[in-house]
Length: 252
Figure 1 (cartoon, rainbow, N blue to C red):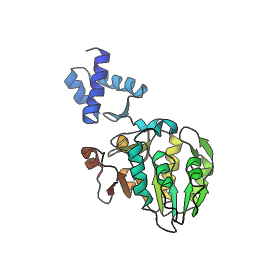
Figure 2 (tube, rainbow, N blue to C red):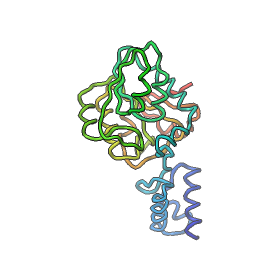
Figure 3 (tube, helix red, strand yellow):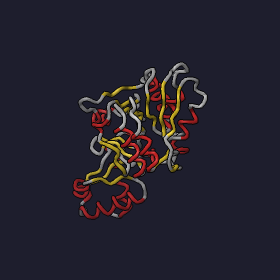
Figure 4 (tube, helix red, strand yellow):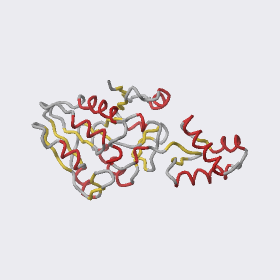
């Protein structure tokens, strides 16, 4: 079998089952496991999949930059934002991550809500300038332009000086085994610090992120308090994410 034929077979397996197991595919295609591993390395280098131990998982489309992500699953993100906005109680201090889903959240906060939003995203902070009763704390540092968020030691110090009621997390991949992941190491570290400094963590996940992985792990799935998804979520993928103690909510 030619290399390109194997690559197509691998991508088709990912599309149909959501994962590739190197040993099983090698037996089916009657090639060596080393050959399949080499194919996976080549496809990973092209950004077509994410290699994991024993095989591969689909690469999250949410790894694109902020501008490109704004055009992905727009209706889902609006629904997720509406649902999440209703979870913020009067007087709370909440961390809000950067990203398109969290932007939809702050854009739909009630005009009468009195709360404090702490964020390392200039985009999120700017979206709240006109809100009459939400106080905004900006957590500054070096701007990571790809995602529009601050990273580095300054952000870490600012986060650790606060204790939030809730953190509205943004990630690019949610997968049962690998957990919560994103595309940059510094971003992953900041997200982990925000989780550690909040009483609970809420994730809004559009359907394109479920069952996907990105290169850098933020935390295991068990670290979440609440997972908000949309009706478009694949039932099989959603079932794999249901853990004891994790509140899975479906937005309207």
